[in-house]
Image (cartoon, rainbow, N blue to C red):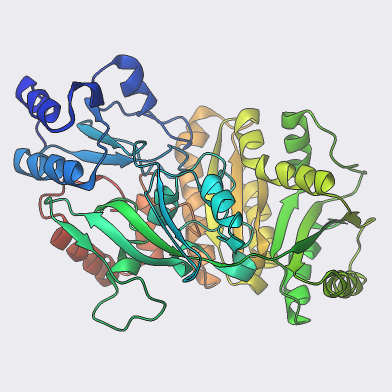
Length: 465
């Protein structure tokens, strides 16, 4: 249904952007053909680098008339294939949208373009005594616009929430070329349908975000980090809810299986911690606030809860270097697993109290189907990343039998009250499982929404549905 790019199209793109921002160079096409999702590759026909919302509007209006598929791309750190140009066509590279436009300290807001790296945005607002909490593992390279498109979370979601909790207003270019504002720069808004939250997590299928207004909160002064080894991975999951039931709300509560820790230390070539025999998993726990005495009391309360479990020696990180080393270990787990073997990463999420049951089910399923799994994730909000390792599995079993196992896993997740993606999105690789998470009518409503925004289906086609 889509047309191929021809010389006239290139001429028109050159007239909109200037020749220096229109590329068909093989290296540039290849760079935009992959992301961090497994080993998938789809070459675009041309890469465009606009610098203004009006330029994007002109491009989309033209492509909509010509039936040219368009894929928006941020930093390429996605894990569901959401930025892959599966039908070729045009990639819109958002790297030039890289400016923080205003930090409004009085109103606790930041206005930014979508191509700003998340960690840079966090650092800049911190200079003003402000805090933007969502911090995905790739925060040092991912773009804030991509975080909004995927509704990213990260370790601090347990206390502070995810990206959707901080988006106040968006400037968006629609697939038909119109530029809209989705809301208002206010904390409360009961005016019409909530288009802002509709765009959050829409994975670049409804429009291209060109400007964001984000809510900020006051920065906290201190934090304490604990690393707790458990002899049983299931008990580590059980302890998560017990900590929260005591009225303690950590700023992070992360789960890492033994292999996740061991592989991350090998990958980084750093022996950050001792890993005695028999240890099955760790919880990485952080509490934060403005009074150290209060934080030490919370740490003591947490260790009191943990006396009910079989744990090893609790490590209290008492300096910034040690804290950074522990967090670097956690953030490198995904890369370590990827470097170790061919793998598939599933992004399951269940009600927090169901985590132990989910972990046990995954291990049982692996035994039945012959795969190894390495699990880690944001246990404080029930989000478990399940890395399925190919290892000794035959190519046939990996390509065919594993799909059966994934369907069984996702049905179990839904049965437990959860869903098939907590923060990575559906994108390309999870769309075949959507019928497990939703009824036919619910998917039909989503398709109708997509059709209203994108009647010709040109924007990020082949994703979600």
